[in-house]
Image (cartoon, rainbow, N blue to C red; front, side, top):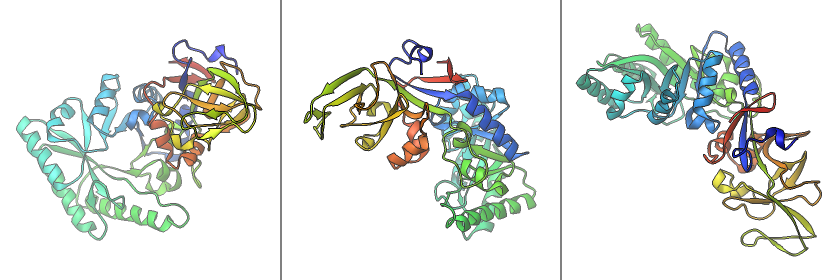
Length: 388
């Protein structure tokens, strides 16, 4: 990999995240074909899982996505201020004092309970506005929403009462399943789907009209029967997830890189890093790499994980510090200025984000969403950086 061809001064001198627009385009095409007539809602919360919400939302609008989901009003407003014109739903509830802004910016919100709905209704009536809302049903995750287990009829009655409140325009009814591992969790997953389907059937039988949605990325891939009117996809669309047991799989999109700042040789028995916890067992070439825990790397991977240098895996040696880590490159032809791949591809060597998540003991979303703002996000076409 040529040093200068990927270099944007001030952005790729230290460490940076590359996001492939080609991969995201392909993931959109796959989901569009697989979900057939279902609407695609792109979930871009947490800065699009760390990949850059505003830039990617605007890119997705260009592909035909007209609906986005975020966690909260602050994220919704970031999209609006960034020029995103599509529909926006906050997956978390808003508070009554945020209602006027939501109405003014045409942002829909999640309604999680009868009490929450009444508070919003009272505020809307007092301010003379109408709030767009989606009612959340709890099919098994146990967080927000009207509980369905053992009380489907009661939950449907509550939802109908919420829909009748003044100042609220209910446009959607949705849930968020907890994904039990296959194959042992399949019965539980299907039980959740059945609870949600039964409740929404009662609502539609009572004459209520709404957008029905329940499928996150995992359920979109594995359970096409719950595509419903809309699929809510994040990891699948953004190219972050491990291949599912079956169904549609995503093309990985993100690669985290850094550059070697210094290479030095330490004699046998020399300490490396804070502590020290590690001593060299032979004359060792050490590469100092300017990325650390303040950039979002977990210290738990030190002395356990390897990063890729010139197509070969170089083990992390010593503690990861705030701004730097050190690699053992004794057996690798490395030079100062060479690119280090934390996750991604370099030649024939690949370390995907989901594999890094396994080392972390975390979900894939945690790996990218915690990357520090001081890591520039760069966007690529055909492997070349086109937009910092």
